[in-house]
Image (tube, rainbow over all chains, first blue to last red; front, side, top):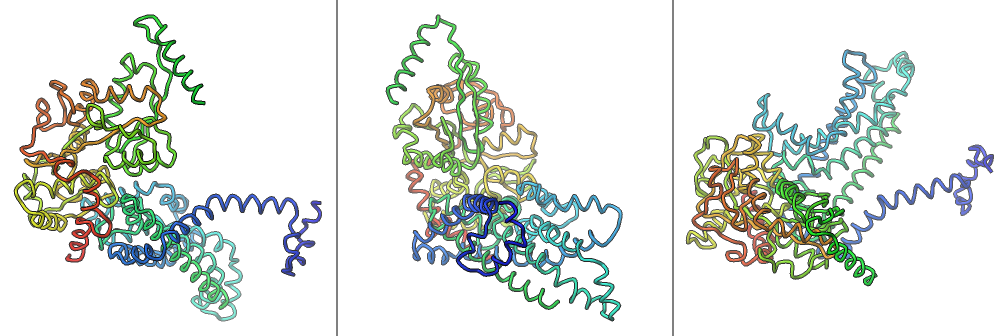
Length: 283
Length: 335
């Protein structure tokens, strides 16, 4: 049986896309797919379906009523706006940091390599506290952004920093330097080489990192608790609104806001994928 | 199953009765206590004292603390609990609706209340802005920190105190709304919970922190640089608790201990106002450790002055039409 799993044997059949597709899976591959799907369903599909079902159950009335709540709408605008800004910044800064880590040799590189992941490891409430003591009213460097929109941006930038770095870094390591040398020898400027050779191969990784950091940013809660001040119409983010609905026992409205976030995340992820394909094709 | 349970209880009590006088065998039970975050210190002290009594010998505790509403929802969602100690009565009512707490939970000697405190105004050490009354809070240049009344149920005590003191002083509803509007204009941060608000305040945010007396006392016991003022008119905070319908009998014993003189004395030591007369207890961290709980001139209660929590939640905190929601919106726009 195991010989049938040779890639050469299965591949042509898979291309046919006929009704036979299911039978192409070997027993072990089928088991793998099955386990994978069950795991994914239990963790992700079923809970997300429950949220959407709750929204649909509440009906269009609840959905539009929730959206028309001025405070909720302001929170959604703020969260999505800041998440987009942070994502754009991460694309630039993350790629730059990854570049530095892969291409340059300098003192403390190993340290930087480890420190990059700290925003992942730190509980977000601690992140909020650290940022508050550094960029709050008692700031040792004289920068106070606590309880302003900049605080929202700052907190989001902190917790999402590693995503683009960590997705771009391995891809950049794989790009052979001789490709760039070949481009240079054919007369391409450094900028052209970057735009036509490097960027297209990095695009999928950058897009993946951007999607992760956007999705993480629109759902952030922990680091805001201390830092943003949760001021209505000013610095209140969507997750705090969801919590307010839950506290009031209005789970239908909470589900509605969650569904909106899901839809926005989905849209942005699809857009990023389209964009990524365009950039990659230019190469 | 019911029969076997009855037999088990019967055996339990008969074996206890058979034990020689004065040598009650240590109980071997572990109680799950689910509480709101601020209740931790008090319960830890009371548990220790309870374990030293005959009833509490061998009783162990596992604990879970968090925001009151979250905790109630967690218990409804299946979190094991023998007893709950929550911030708002409505959170226990949710458990009654879910058949997890008996409907007569609030008929005991303290009407289901386990701990109480009052809303106070905390300021930085030495009171640099010279805050003395509620009126001082709405002066220009005073930054107020109070937990977010939207997402934190416990934060609602503070807002109602600010509103109620105007009414108690002879003001109209419109006067109270106007006061609350100026109040929110001075709000610089609404952190997630009472604890978060204290943390943000200690990290330098704002000039005053609306808090509970027990939180202020606890912070001072931990040498945090704050002072607090008990306003002349303030709101009595009453935190309910109950045993669940599936609880081990030891849970009821603990609950009875908590509301006894000895239990309330333990609570008082960490800053809660005792529900029964506990004699003189020295409370370090209080403004006057020997007379730690000064009686305010006017003490408002949620039942008498606001018609109970259900009515107050609807009137003040409804996500669309609530008075506080509206005021937050208006002040959010104006600045």
